Image (cartoon, rainbow, N blue to C red; front, side, top):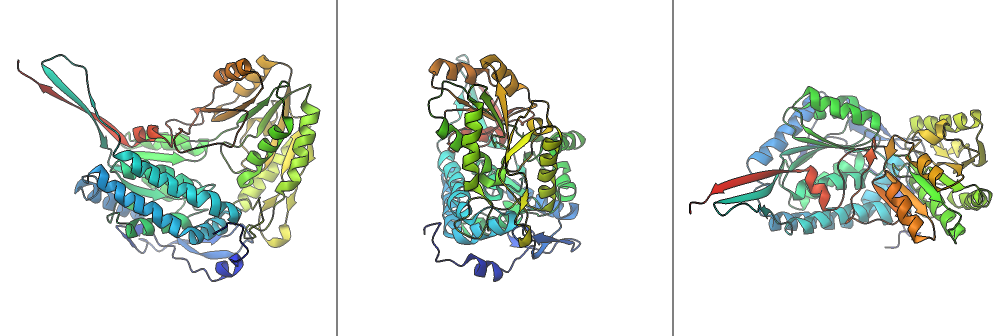
Length: 500
């Protein structure tokens, strides 16, 4: 159906929703060990959607044991890749068939507009699962070029039990980025969704079981990071952690690995992506529209959001005016209204964080050209206006730290060297963008930028076939593409002597 169709009364569906917040372990919903729960609060209006199990170490242990048993007996890992492919393709189909249900859960849980939950998040999650399903029986192992008296076979093997810890900004998509390659490779998974957005993860596990994934292969334990997340990262029977979240918690993941079994840790962390606009670019309105759309999409709650906009001083005034003119298109609205393009921040804590950054920007001398205020407070939800700061200096807090909200900072540069230096003067290195009509400059600057992805004359194009990840404190390893298999497989060499 058309994601903007008025035929669905999303408010009525939301009112009729009944949630099951219990963990999914060993192929079924189970009661948590000690019965603790927490409220699932919708950022749309602040109402309590229901009770979610507050997973503890005991629940994590049960889930890991289920995953280990499933791995060790080969019910999934020992299946031929072509057989795993069939199940995962059916899982992807199940996700698409449940599109409206999953989209509603995602929107109620973390506040994004229903039209994007329908048109972006659900299809992207399904495509990810399907893509890795299709890829897994097309990856060949290797034979090393040894001498004639040996045969050295190099094979990829599944690691075992993978702990996946995902954030609240793209709950389904981030889960799929871990599940796709991990399951396709033959691993078992214990998924810990963010306590701020646990609903779709629990439903995905049920859909996977319906698709034929064996019991125990995919388990979900909701809970808080310092409880369930820490227990998962410390567990001695977990072989690797795939984590997406803040750099602060990413450091803890590495610490937990050192305190436990030196499990592999793959962190996809924060960003403060730079968007460089040079005076030779011949379509400034398109650049302005692109940066506004990319920055305000998902309420700015994206690790790759282009929040540092570096513009040559000769065109800065014009560019700021163009971006400011785009902002009204992204005014916050009711996320359950199919016409809304910018929704609510995930919770009151994130609202307070974003507003504190806006206040810091004003105190340090930046000027809010548009926005800068909380809005729709009468709804009971957590909304902020799309905000564009000008007069921003590199040392200001809003130019250095990840805000995770709809707040853009525009900085000015004098020449190419200064632009590159400013862009690279960040502990992050996730993404960047170069806008220039000169091919030499575009390549030169793209090579100079320390970022995992550099866009040229665009920002919002993406595909499963390209890796996602960053340099420096933006993390290690890559999600998406064939490179993600590196995170969830071990290389084994089998060396045979051949007598001549």
